[in-house]
Image 1 (tube, rainbow, N blue to C red):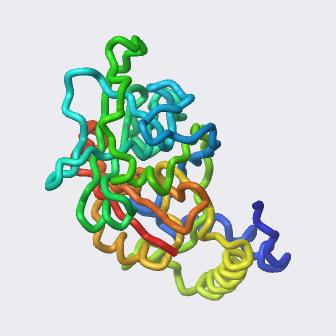
Image 2 (tube, one colour; image 1 turned 180 degrees about the horizontal axis):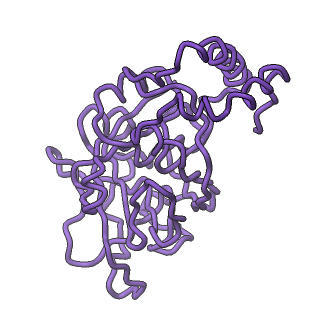
Length: 276
């Protein structure tokens, strides 16, 4: 929803002092890179059956749920202790994703996140998660695994979440007014009153428009939830994916170090789950 206009006098003050405000922020690279992000639009297209049939999407399409792109001859992701196969939770065909400044996302290949257990909390608490990246994509079905009946749906998230959603991506500008936990915007004293007034107006807007339901995205700034400050305080990486799947009260976050993203190394991605 578009922002309602702030009070006219406040807007005039911002216009008069715009250049001063831009200089005053002295946005660090850490903050600046959070402004751009990619919105994920989910459209339910079907449901996966207990025997892993019923996915109407191709194996190489971007999706939430369903069956993964998985070349033959590779070891399928499994829970380390039990050996139970994980399920594909989200798959991104990188060629479908627009490029944005400050986010060195691959221009091709398939990126996947897998989760184990029957609840999101299981995957988070017990580290039952994995992320895979295939830099080359084959659309020859003979190269790919097509039978996923070895997955026991009753022992996975599919038992409660069997939806399959296609994904579309669009660029957006993040709405956030707060610096990373423990950081400051460094507002000079002469602008502190103006900053406080605008903050008060924006707080009211966020409350009235239920801003913790801003949707799923790649990159940018994590949306405000109950413990996101604590997560960010402990997390050295940047936001890779934020998901609010199936219009639930659950939020899933994946963070990655910039150097790992640049190297296309997704083996050390950190996963978090939060429930509002």
